[in-house]
Image (cartoon, rainbow, N blue to C red):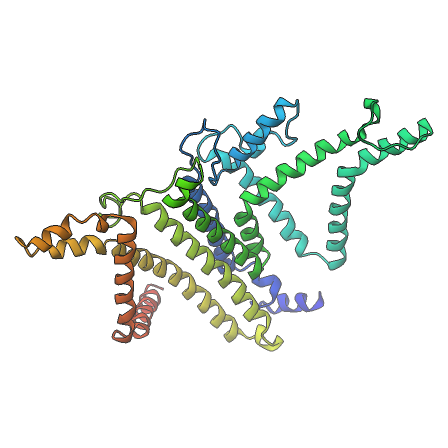
Length: 404
C-alpha cells in the first residue's frame, strides 16, 4: 500500500498490475474481444439456428436454446409442471435475436461478478465458493431431507421417501423443482458455453477459458457440418436447415462473395479478432508482470510498452481488413478461373468449364480458394512482407508525428 502511494506521489505511469488493468489500451483489447465474441455468437445463431419445419417432431440440432427448452417444457406441462426460470429471462417465446439478448445480458452480469470476486483475497474467494456450493446442495436436498426427517419423527416410523401409499410420505416430490432448475441451467450453459468461457477468459485473464470458447465453437461447427452432410441426413431423420450446397452469384462485398458465404466469412473474421485480442491482452499483461520492479517504474519501458500496445491495435484493424479481403478474393477465384477460360471463345473445352456445376458448388469454391491461398502463401518467399509492413508503419508514425 505504501509502495502504491509512493508511486502515485512520483507522478509516474508504471507497469504494475493494478495500473495495467486500467490502461485504456488493455481495456480496448478486452472490449474488442468481448464485442467480437458476442457478435460471433449472434451471427452463428442466425446461420446455424434454424430448422426446416418448426412443427415437425423430428430432432433439430440447431444453435437455439429455446427449441430445447420449449420441447421439454411442453412435456412438463402435460404433467402439470414448469421450469422455475421464467420465459422472459431465457428468451423463450421471442423471435429473432431477441431469444438471446436477455440470457447474454444475465451472463455478462454473472461474469462481471465472478471477475470482481477473482480480484479478492483467496480466503474470501474460498468462502464464497463454498457458500455457493452449500446453497446449491441445500436448495436441492434441504426441503426434501427436512420433510422426510420430520415425517419419520412425528410418525415414529422409518420409511422410504418414495413409493408410499400415503401421498404425504412421498417426499421425493420436493426434489422435482430443484432438479428442473438445474436441468434448465444445464441447457443454458450448454448452449452458451462459448460465451461464458470466453468472457471469463477475457476479463479473468485465462488462456485456458479462451481456448475452451474457441474449442467449443469449432466442435459445434464441425458437428453441424457433419449432420448437414447428405449421407447423414439420408440415414438419420433430422429437422435441420442445412447450409445450401450450391452457391449463388457474388453480389456482396462489391461483387466478391455470394450471400451464402458472407455470414461464414464474418464468423471466421470475428473468431480471429476474438482469438487475437483475447490472447494479446493476457500476453502483454504477463510480459509486464514478469518485468523486474525497477523496469516497471522506468519511463522508457513504460513508453515502449505503450508503443507495443498502440501498434497492436493498429495491426488488428489492418490485418483483419486484409485477411477479409484476401479471403474474399480466394473465394472469388473460381469465378476468375471461369473468366479466364472464357477468353478462349469457341473452344469446346472452355464451354464445358463455364457450364461446369462443380465450380458453382461449395467444394469447388473451397478447392479454388485453397489454390489461391497456396499461391498467396508462396509469395512470402518472393515479396519481403516484413520490410513492406515496416515501411508502412514508419510512414504512419511520421504522419502522426507531423500532425502533432
